[in-house]
Image 1 (tube, rainbow, N blue to C red):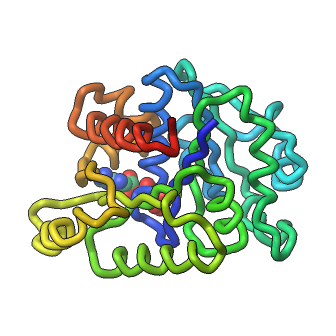
Image 2: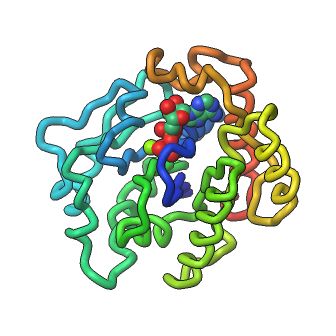
Length: 244
Ligand SMILES: Nc1ncnc2c1ncn2[C@@H]1O[C@H](COP(=O)(O)OP(=O)(O)O)[C@@H](O)[C@H]1O
Ligand SMILES: [Mg+2]
């Protein structure tokens, strides 16, 4: 099982949109996929119309009681571990100084799934540290603006600080608008850097509409530019050595 965490310290950069659509792309490509919603706001769970079972909460999660709380999505090969509001302070319950607790928790799923995709909350915390250590790849959406590039630079420093392997970090440009000069210029200057994947995700109305359709773009707009972009992004990630 490969663990891919969609992470950024910034909110509103397209993490949830990516986690939802990449998990769908992965399942369509025949991989048994689990989308784990770690953001207490539960947007990924909402998009997939899935809610946590009555007793599922932070305590259950930390005890590793995952399997019985996993829910099926409406799509073949794709399951969800929904978020719970109590996840907002998961951080406080992780043991100080330990960064491998999540890795242990997820290891029980290794036989069942080919891919585990994590939709992360936006902050830099002990939880993020645990997620980064557990992940085989950390995928970070970057809106092509100065501040987002800065957040990526900070993330690279954070990797060094916690002793995580920089090689597992990959960024992609997210919500790219061609009519904005700053976007075009930023993409041009940074795209060739090793940390960036080639695929970029344009700003597209289909993605915004997921809030209404409550389905991944591939399910409602199969073959559309948005669905194709996420599928390409998935193919680029899954081709990487760490994924084989
Ligand atoms: N490629 C895109 N094109 C248009 N809107 C997008 C795109 N990606 C995300 N959005 C919208 O931007 C907002 C923030 O995206 P979201 O994925 O929730 O970000 P995050 O999880 O990083 O906070 C949402 O309203 C979402 O619908
Ligand atoms: Mg989100």
